[in-house]
Image (cartoon, rainbow, N blue to C red; front, side, top):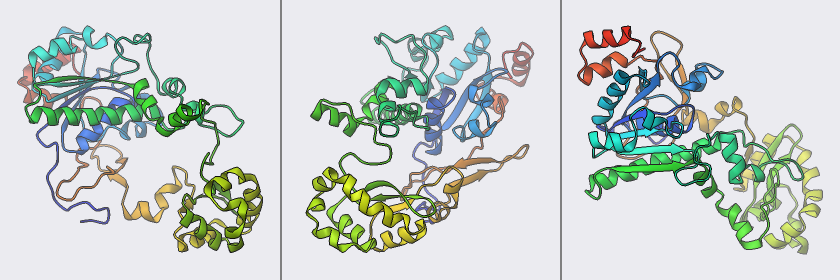
Length: 401
């Protein structure tokens, strides 16, 4: 194995699986990128002339590159009959079709489930939607921030006494993408076992985001109250959260009795262990203000590295707060080689984040660098029966990029 736990060689779990991708921006592309990392061949259909909308989002092309490795770009005009026939031919030979178009758009392109399942009865068809069939918001376009707001995620993000905040990550997109890739894998497994022929999966972004409330919803189910915004501190664990040091803040997560004892030793205040105000976790939560008055001046007296070393020596979870630039300098991140560069012959190389899951006998891949719009149009269509002359005619007609 390498330093990240990856085998030098191994079988790709989805080798031999073909995925046709009609998605854009984040949710759908994240889904199909995960499938491509696992070995599937992903054919990304993009609009002629424009492509995936994320191609025009700054920084360009880094935004697009971040979720579009391991894909072959085919540019088609799906408003044309010829473009629709080409897409249908690709889907007819595929195992999976993932789409995240506006409500009704797939049907307008003659790529709805009813149409393409007749061409390919064994197809796993996955629709990533904002709200889904039978929702009162079925026709409403969905964006990540809207989903975060409507799901409750935004209400619990922010400082105590402050306003709700967007999480900063496109959480609604990433949650839906994670469920979509999971559901596609489940359907492929069911098909392989003979349980189904084909399947139509619907992943509503709002439903998916609400499901991630988990323990935060549990707070409301148990108390009847909304989960509060607490910034970087925990409602039921103390000491747990962000603490200022002489130079910068750190995170300390002393979430067990053992960690509490280690915390007290690390700050050289063992007498706190005999203080009745802090005897149990519930006591520490009830008296968090009093504990903060004691602990915070101590931590502000030394720099962050000093305290992190002290806490680690006592096996107390603690660490720095990185930004998206400094995180790549961390020893763990560098040893795991999470920042990868994918070479491209005709333009700047692509910076990507390595696939995070590591197998023992299986493996993942970073094989196809993010492509230019339509870079694989000719090669993919030729493989699906189009002659060079037919391709040239379609290009002259504006059907292809």
